[in-house]
Length: 456
Ligand code: HEC
Ligand code: HEC
Ligand code: HEC
Image (cartoon, rainbow, N blue to C red; front, side, top):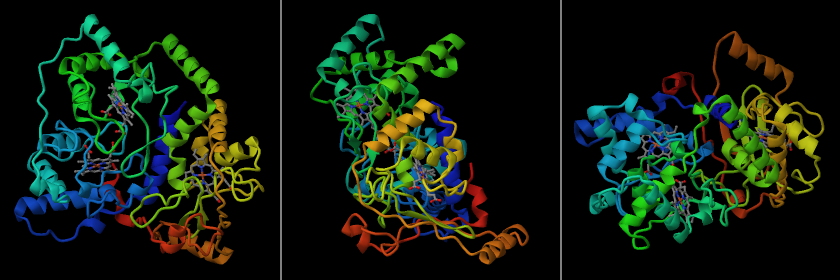
């Protein structure tokens, strides 16, 4: 279970490939007075690589992030102190930008952006949705809290049962053995219910007050509803205390013995529910982020998830298209043995014995996955419904073009853009949906030599 390392490695691989340059975004300041200019220039340098120049959540880095950067134009925000469906307050937005959202690519910008700059960038974010002109945030009235006593926690447990939180979060809060597990957000991306035993992953904060606000406000844009009207305030405070009490000890505070027991339990769970565990790993690592095709607004084209088709143009190495991981017997992994699948993603060797480049797929870092985790990934891939989608073999340059390219890189120190695009329909066979055939391929990422400034 060394996911963080693997995740980090794959994220790094992606970022090193996709990090755009700050220059790309430094267009001249627009109207809106001095603070408007300041907000715009900070936004374009710092935020646009993920949230897009037009705030649509489709910056060059967005395609491969999970969860995806917010699309600001719809005016839907997850973490608010306001009623469900209402806009956030300035304080809510400022807290998000300052503190970041735990466990996502949205980092804590408070270290870099303060004071007037922070105010200006928040004001600029609000210009993307016309709702901020017409609607006012409707703040939630926060009643006085209930102290976290044994009685309140016991009462909160009853509320947890009454409100059927377990349907999505599991009886023990870990999300295991749930009724509903395939959640999508309003933007059609897969998301997971929070693991309530790991409060340090709560994006909206982990104090009883933060948790109480989540019940009242809901998490807009996701299946996590608001409970206003279904439970009293007292019940919501008891429930918040109960959820806070579910926190397990974080691994970094465990003793050696506790760690051993903890990982043994995780291993047992993984072996008992390989498909569920594999699904978790595949989604955490983000295999589908590469092994899918995207439309022009960077949404996954329906019917291509895990069916491959994203082409990495890597001069001078050639063009490499991600492959079909579904159970289709002819064009996917349907006829592969477990060993062959594991060898491909941990050793970078195709079924026919062809060696993959060490990038873009960071197979060397997947090699550090434990055997049980690798088996779980295979078990999950086996459950993907077959999609017939033939992927072309890599296009490699001839030896002269390759050597000339290497010479320019190593000796002349020139750098070249690496770009990513969805496969052209003519390259594959039986593109799964008509949308894929209709939409022209569009490069979604560029890297240029000045990219360094944004590396953080
Ligand atoms: C590396 C990518 C990345 C960068 C750079 C980035 N963000 Fe985000 N941001 C995200 C992601 C991902 C989310 C969505 C997380 C989620 O859905 O839980 C997000 C969400 C947000 C939200 C919405 C929170 C909510 O309640 O819905 C705001 C506001 C925001 N970002 C502002 C900014 C600002 C301002 C900047 C620049 C200073 C910035 N972001 C830079 C990735 C990024
Ligand atoms: C229909 C399914 C569903 C139900 C019912 C549900 N949740 Fe959630 N919950 C979710 C999802 C999905 C998320 C993750 C949202 C996201 O991606 O930001 C979530 C997130 C959360 C979070 C973390 C928010 C954060 O700050 O990151 C808490 C706490 C939480 N739920 C508690 C509860 C409790 C307690 C109940 C019962 C009152 C409940 N949920 C009912 C689906 C559900
Ligand atoms: C950064 C993008 C990226 C990520 C993330 C990624 N892959 Fe890949 N994968 C590729 C590319 C590109 C290829 C094709 C390489 C080639 O043909 O040389 C590939 C090839 C494969 C193959 C070989 C299939 C075949 O038909 O030859 C398998 C199996 C595979 N990936 C599984 C996975 C799994 C499982 C994960 C998650 C643990 C994953 N990949 C994550 C980019 C990625």
